Image (cartoon, rainbow, N blue to C red; front, side):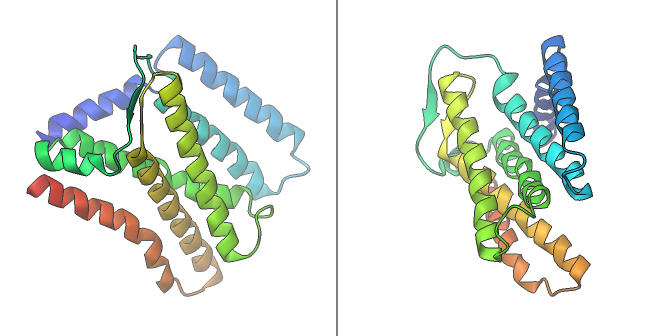
Length: 213
C-alpha cells in the first residue's frame, strides 16, 4: 500500500537523521561548530548573502553524505547496478511504491544544491549564464558521483547510474528555481525557465506510467 510505503520511507529517513544517535549527533555538532568558525573568520570578507548561503550549502552537502553514506551500516559485499533506468523497469514489473518514493526523493534531495550553489558563489562563478549553469550542474553531478563511489567502496549502498541521473535532474530543477527567483526580483520574463523543469516532469510521467501498467 502507498501509505505503508510512505511510513516506512519516513521511518528510514528518521533512522539516518543527524540526531538519530549519539555518534551522529556529535558529528553534526562538530560540523556546525566548524562552519561557525569559518563564518566568523570570513565575516568581513563575505557578503550577507554569502554568510547565509555558504554555510547552508556546506551543511546541506554534509546531510546528503550523512543520509547516504556516513550513518549507514556497511554490507559484506560491493553492490552496484550499471544498467541505466533499471528502476523504471523494476517498478513496471513489481509496482514497488517505495522505489517510486526513492526516485522522487533522489530528485528532491538535490534541488537545494542547484539553488544554493549559485547563491553562495554568485560572485565567484563566471557571469556568462551558460557557463554558470554548466558549472552548477557539473558541481552537483560531482557531488552525486562522490556519494555513489563512497557507497560502493564503503559497502554502505549501491552504486547506480539511476541515482546519479536523478540527482542531476534535481540540480537542474534547483537551478531553474534559482533563475526564477532571480528573474522575479529583476522583473524579467521567466517563460524559458520551463525547460529546467521538463526533466523532472518526465520522471514523474514515467513513474506514473510504470505504476499503472
